[in-house]
Length: 274
Image (cartoon, rainbow, N blue to C red; front, side, top):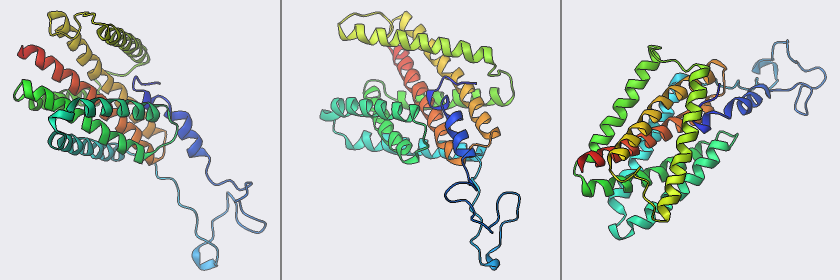
């Protein structure tokens, strides 16, 4: 089953190769004549032979939780640093630069078939700078809006986690297909709106109008329900015994959805303030 989050949709095949590509007795590093192979007990250190190679540690729920908390902490620290260190005169250029770099890194991570913790951490730093500068801009116009958005974001996250744990809403195949179609349509609408905005055309989706409020609510709803797909995919990865380092990918997907949800809530609150 695929998830709407691109980083979690391409892991199965790559992780399965890694998980099954372990020690090969017929390969160049396999046992020579007279040495033990599969089905035979591996010699101990006392016998004079080298110790058995360590087994791959399977991924657990704790791995996903710890990695997600780590990435959120890094993102938060980077956001605070950008808020306080980047001067107002450079806010625009740094904001745009962080957005571009974050987009590139996100695409690389999403379509890569290698677990790369360093790249994921780098993405968290860049994304944190982007979020920090966006938050600073909104806070300059609407006092207290950032704290409200943070509280609302984690409130939605924990609510969806409870609903998933209680199996109130399940990520069935039909549900997944529907979410994929909805998110593809939403992405297309956002892209068209962005292109038209560059040419001075106002579609009313991001101008604070009643239509913009409805559109933001739709985006928030889709972002919230995408958590269910991310939770389900992480569970499948755990049940399949994927290596623990793949938890970085699951954490990256959850963090990306959290950031998206936060930005949409921030935008909605700004509309309501006006």
